Image (cartoon, rainbow, N blue to C red; front, side):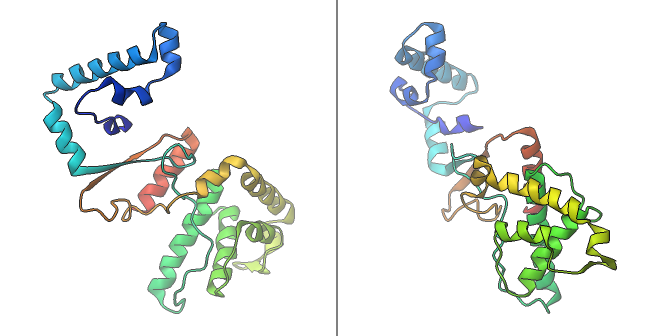
Length: 237
């Protein structure tokens, strides 16, 4: 899909040259410029085989904006797929607004646990239940959080009970320490910062302000992260 951005109606080798893999040229024993010329000719022949020529390519270029989003990487346009711990301004006494907030909280907890490679069910997992309750308590009190505070409260929760059980019965301190360590390892990982960069994952905002069609191409993260990202995308559709 990313090849859609290689839209050069003139098929000039110079247009292809910046995108040539120089390691490939070295393996073939040819100059990168020659490989660019070969790629240009191959591109032209392939498109002509599909009945497409310069006119169609120019129409495509003027009809659509193309963007490559690369969650977890800055090689394209990164996307913040984790979300924000900033408390939304809403009325918790309003059932509809409270439901929207809880959906966002559930997504936040699922995001963090998935990136930490913890398989957690929102209904039965103590990890998920604890995180959502911690975030909801802060948000319902109008308090913003950050990841450091969230991890700290995993070890020392701000509530005495979860449901009808004492917190130590529901989720013992030793197990909470293990969760805190996993989350801390995630936050300490340099690669994690890339998952917080860029605009938020909002399907409705991806088309952009232009009236032209927006073609959004997503990069390919690792399988575990790709599965999480697919679920997150569906949730926000």
